Image (cartoon, rainbow, N blue to C red; front, side, top):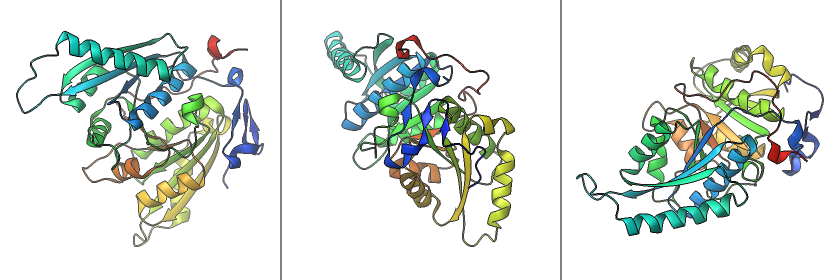
Length: 316
């Protein structure tokens, strides 16, 4: 271990129960990132219900606006003719019902219906908000619109959180918070930004952050040198915000990242945006059993600056 703190308890978080999958967070003691708009596009599938519930919890924990949208796919290459008023109202009723199920006691929410190419409409809608975070169902075999998530992840300006159909545990869907974070990086300069985004999440709960690098077996790179390089990329302030460990291993990157996240009972995997069509990021999106956060430099998550009081809705 290469932790920056010795205690198993941090402000508001008891890590003694982490191995059992139950982490107790005292809501009044935790920080909050300044997020204003959480965008949750849905297609009314089971996995989108899971993502909307997670988005609702994230919005409530930070007193943010929760917005959902459904895109009616256009047929063919021609421009859509528009949505009929009866059809639009029918979809709006379904969206309002979905919002009510996901966030029944939360008033800061809204819905919209669009028509056209789903990925294009989602990206345009998120930019107009402007969304601080997009939360949507992960691509995978169970979800026919999975490729839409892959396009959104690659082209979004803000961070995107994908949620699997069957998460290993409730975690962020219950609290909207992340206490066990796996940050998957490589040896490129962009990894420093990915680490900073993972630290931002860890700051909210003084959580456990595991920085994971999977090196190729034939690269000849010294694991100790990789470890030292990653430790140097972690800002000095992180030691007072979250407990940090660095894990260096070998193998197929996507398989190892998904395995380590499952073994550590992670709440989220943070990984860099894909740089090509067939990437480690895309493979992790479809294989991870916990949510995956893909940050983007154009609109990153806020960097921690001060300790903030919990929203009034969480105070006892």
